[in-house]
Length: 258
Image (spheres, rainbow, N blue to C red):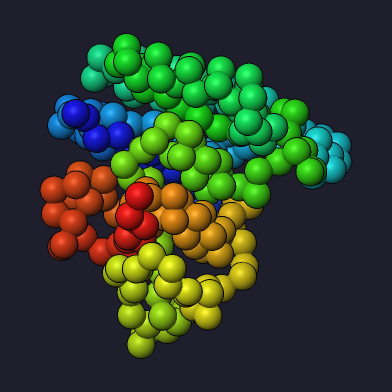
């Protein structure tokens, strides 16, 4: 039976210092996911980056509030983002499908079942689902906290074996990562509280941060799914996590036994 992995790639991984999309990084992540599929791993990709894509496409000569920026740039940028993934994965003969969702779709009921069935039939037919929040309509209280939360819900919905959260740092440390004395926490047993080590700040370009990743990882591990937090800027990080996990720096949340 194939392993099923949900991979979440955050804005800090896909965005350059000028807040525009890093196309080279998108290509590298696509190559690595293609490698996983060639090694009999089913993948669902939860990808940020639409707003960064839109910001690089359109210059606005008047002031927009935060909601207007989010709606405008995500609407434009999502088209470009999925187009890039389409081109990169086509080189490997991989078909991709877009899934735009919002928080209300995860309430029990018909919408939940329809979304689950959609991704199930995509996987059964070799299609790679690429998921993002529908930022054009998801605003204020309708929004996910961030794509960490979304990826955790997808992992549980689709009964994944593993959730991988790719950030721009190596994992969770026992003090601020910039501290030379900081040590990576490699394994987190079920129920272990790491809140004293988590900084509350958000990431530079996204809505999340390590606090969000820790919250998602704890919930998903409690649901019986292994969770890995790793550095998406490291070359070949995804194959290394599969082939050489003991030699690859990351934080792993061990799942609660079902």
